[in-house]
Amino acid sequence: MSKEVRRAAEILGRGGLVAFPTETVYGLGADASSEKAIARLYKVKGRPADHPVIVHFASSSEAFTWASEVPREAKLLAERFWPGPLTLILKRSDQAKDFVTGGQPSVGLRVPSHPIARDLLKEFGKPIAAPSANRFGRVSPTTAAHVREDLGADVDLVLEGGPSEVGIESTIVDLSGGAAVLLRPGKISKDDLQKIISLGRAGASPRHSGGMDRHYAPRTPARLVPTHELDREISKLKARAAVLAFSRPDERVDFWLRMPREPAAYAQKLYAALRELDDAKCDAILIEAPPAESAWEAVLDRLRKATA
Ligand code: TXA
Ligand code: MG
Image 1 (cartoon, protein in one colour):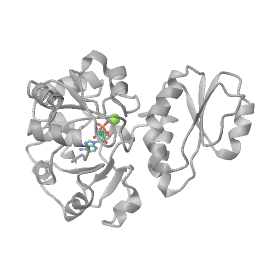
Image 2 (cartoon, protein in one colour):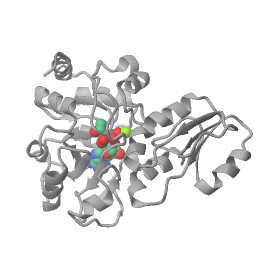
Image 3 (cartoon, rainbow, N blue to C red):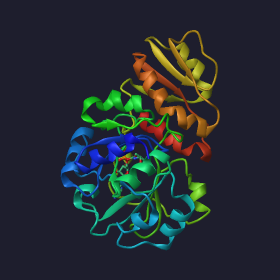
Image 4 (tube, protein in one colour):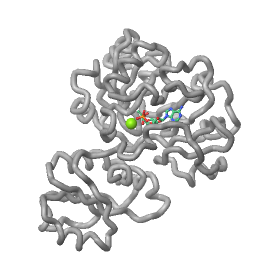
């Protein structure tokens, strides 16, 4: 256990805020059982009080004590994917208070796999509530430097863990109603889930900020462009533009970022790329659309939100 992790656990114990790496994105952590700590977390995030946060645990057995009912599907998914980039929404037990669930009867539970997140959870000995460590409406941070840029002195400590391996937020499955519903795609895809459980259709799903349009938005207006229209769109450009594409740079474009053709590698780089495009201070961002294939589902979801 590193000295930094021990310090982080002390800060959490005093009601402070610690940003820490997870395998998906960096989280902004607070003691999930402390109303005061959570109030500060919401204030720093700029997040409305009725939006729930995900609670992180060191093990599935601990996580399930925050649920009043653990359906068979939840156990199967936990066995297969925890620790890892999956969040389960279950009916809450009385451990989960209104101040972490946004007043909803359900709670979001996650057991992360990143070694520093796991060390911190063990050292702190209690669950940690952690939304992504960005301000409300900005893209999630995938490096400690992103967190510092967004939150500055509002966070008491940022644990350094290098760039996040997955790069996009956890897959969220809602098991608090009848059928299992995929609320947010992630590295664990619909196909991965369907090898283990069956998924129902999304109906009146509970409130979740990831479901809101423009949640993962860069500041510069951004558009998704199909590959076959990219050249024409570039030729029509009047203002300074930044492009995110698979192909080589086009000299007519001021700022060009090339992305990998493989979905996992693309996801890993996505949020850093969106930040870079934004920082290029252009008037418009064009993003070449990835193929409409299931392997790209999670990336496409984030790109649609960034361009909504
Ligand atoms: O990968 C992740 O999940 C990261 C890392 C830090 O763990 N966390 C994350 O948290 O993305 P956040 O708060 O930025 O996004 C959590 C999503 C939100 O859309 C939230 O509304 C939803 O999960 N959520 C949490 N609890 C919920 C509940 N009880 N019912 C429905 N949605 C819920
Ligand atoms: Mg977030």
